[in-house]
Length: 150
Image (cartoon, rainbow, N blue to C red):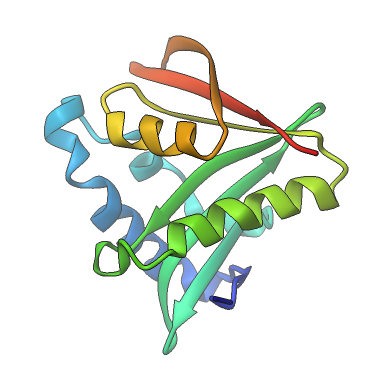
């Protein structure tokens, strides 16, 4: 399914923040603080053209934050409104991130997630991401993963 992914605009920022809040709120108790994506500056990320969104009937329902690195594309954030979980939108965004990586001549895509988000680690593993290392950064215990692209 084509979900109409597009580059975010400043008008999307309230919707982006709403989706991020809803998607990550359940992890606060598990982690003991807000997850990193809840602290990001989405105005700056949109200005830097790093955020893509899926809007349905004018409302942001999902987002993808991508940051080009020297040797890979960093999938910095992927978030889907909880009301759309299980509809394939997350898989669509993962595939889109990989297409962006290949279009940018990146042979690898990287991501990180909090080690307490075990379901995310399992999901990324199912899609071919392998753990490269773990580290504490900004007070958050992160699991770093990477996928080689064809």
